[in-house]
Image (cartoon, rainbow, N blue to C red; front, side):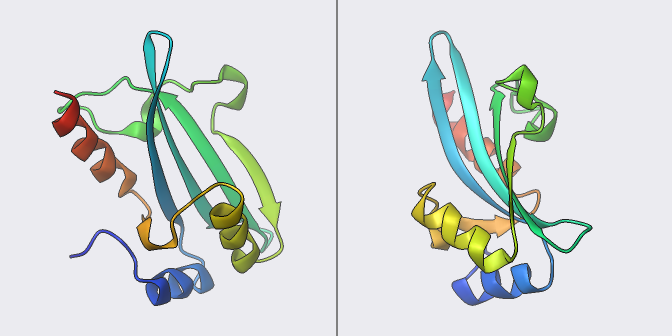
Length: 123
């Protein structure tokens, strides 16, 4: 199974209300590594939410659950969120303003696979 959604698959996933994610990678802040990704999800009220998550690199090969890592900003425990009236608007914002590559979106939960790949290069 291919990790990344085709553009058609991305559009279909968003239209169906499925959450998609995009891995931005790792950056150093002083002595710590910060992991960054975003997700686009449909909210209960029908709007679309774009959330940018940043967490400290608390993981290792046996612990890949980036969703459980320590937030980089304690005041934004689940990331920073922005609401849009449609998934198309959220996707446009992600690509044009945040630099997301439309060919690198994946289904929910696969950000952990990106982190696992990063660990292989880090160790």
